[in-house]
Length: 364
Image (cartoon, rainbow, N blue to C red):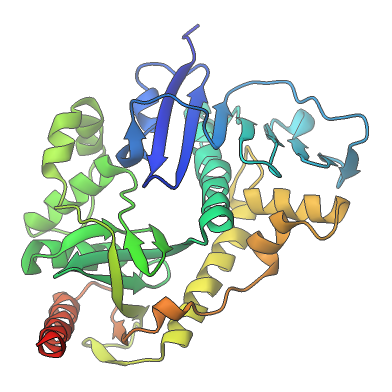
């Protein structure tokens, strides 16, 4: 049996986390560490979130309250036990303190694979836990969006699935000299968009496909090659920018009736409301998509049933954040057809160029 493997991560000096996986072979370990590989660091320290992935035996306190048969809740403790249905188990301890311990066992995934189950645990339990801590401790917002930067300005791209956020971001990097920040999991804090490169092996393959003039897809062969040859992966990535102030937001929509890209201004609060609605939709949608582990949002709901008034629930599902003052920036709406239109990247680049000229005139 393979020995436990560990990896440490530092998210821009704001949050530290560690993942320890049991029964992870040399072939599966690169897949498990792919999501947050950009934040990997060699240091070892007491992590704010200590995430253990693999079989474990839950140990609920004696005063734990049972909710919906499979949840056990007590102050500062939360546990989900899937029982005989092979739906795994999740245990969260210390979440009223600064150092959390998160354990998750996902025996089988969507395709009957143990590796797929572990990937689902990372996506549906670990990642939302990180997002919660970033919001609780630093007032950061993690939104489903993309971002690029140029001339010290960050442009945030907001839209649902299938609105071509990633193709647009990569096209801006390739043809218009932008730097990449994020394409799905975007951290907004203190008026800045911070680089959040998820799955850099996937991003490298998609970017190289765009450079060759093809769609932003990656083949399984290319993904396997990047996982085995990390140096080539980092060389094939687009240029990665640093955190910088948000100066523009673009709301992306898709319409099957659209023949060309429609472009126009839109109010910032409408874009923010749409972004928050997408986040809530993602939480609700994932509650029914997993097959091995329970989603973090469902854990928060169970804890609220047992111990009402918890911040765990309020910050996850019970509150709709209002538009931050630092997001009072120019916003545009782009409506395009079901296929990506390069014209959209041209319009975004033109708007950024005009904004940059305006900043130079104001400075003069």
